[in-house]
Amino acid sequence: MKQFLVQLAQRPVLSLWIDRIVPPAGQSAQLTLMTAAAMAFLAVFALALAFSANRLADSWSAAFLDTATVRVSAAPEQAETQVKRVLEVLATTPGVTQARAIPAEETQALLAPWFGPDLPVASLPIPRLIEVSTTRDGFDAEGLALRLQAEAPGAKLDDHLRWRRPLVETAIGLRRLAIVSLALIGGATAAMVTLAAQAALAANGQVIRVLHLIGARDVTIARAFVRRFTLRTLAGALAGTALAALAVAFLPVVADGEVLAHLGFSGREWLWPLCVPAVAAVTALLATRAAALSRLKSEA
Image 1 (tube, rainbow, N blue to C red):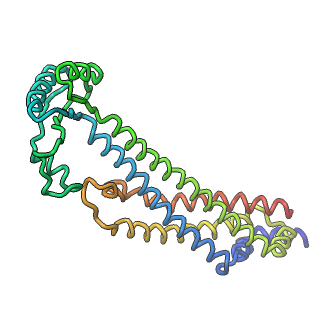
Image 2 (cartoon, one colour; image 1 turned 90 degrees about the vertical axis):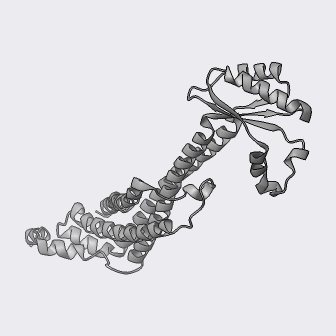
Image 3 (spheres, rainbow, N blue to C red; image 1 turned 180 degrees about the vertical axis):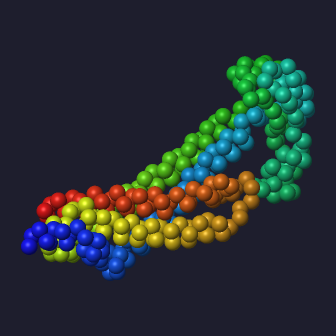
């Protein structure tokens, strides 16, 4: 009789019956679907944040990379003379490709967002600005600052390093935050699937013990749970990814130059959200297999 039951346990009919012990509906199934969808939704936004932070860092770095500014603060009757001296010094400085004194009209346009378009630039003690373009290798900022101090005491060099470094570090920090968020989302997904699989195994404890008595192997029983929970996670992740992709695609358009102008995906980056359901399914497969085999071994 025992030999007959063992042979029965190895037949496809019993394998199909083993597959049916995993509840096709219920709280565990709904929990798996909804949590997988929510985690995939968050994962897509974390990916968008990571790529956006990367583009933001590149944009902020490039905006100040090959430029510098000289600020000339002097009395009105001396300002023009010092500007000419600064331009002469910059013309003979290695690494400087171009230097241009910014006219009063452009200065007024730069200050207009803060002080309004009617700002009387000519009657205010506003420093004269000189825009400097440099080569990729840059220039000797310390040596240039000393030369400017000797030739034009009112001139101050700003190589933009103190502005560029905090901006780039902030963007890099956002990228790291997005990567950590992705890791946490993956861990939460694995924990959720593990709990749901253990609940399903506990609910079918008596059936599993009977299957053990007739010779069913742990791998065969675990395979049924792995298949169901992997498919559920994949279905939920596909839904969450689709909703998140639509949400990112319809984000409001922000003008260039603003921080949020880089938020979202661009070009080939849209292929990355397609990896989210696949990664979620693999995570569910590994988590369910580990949880099922551990539980079955303890009940053997």
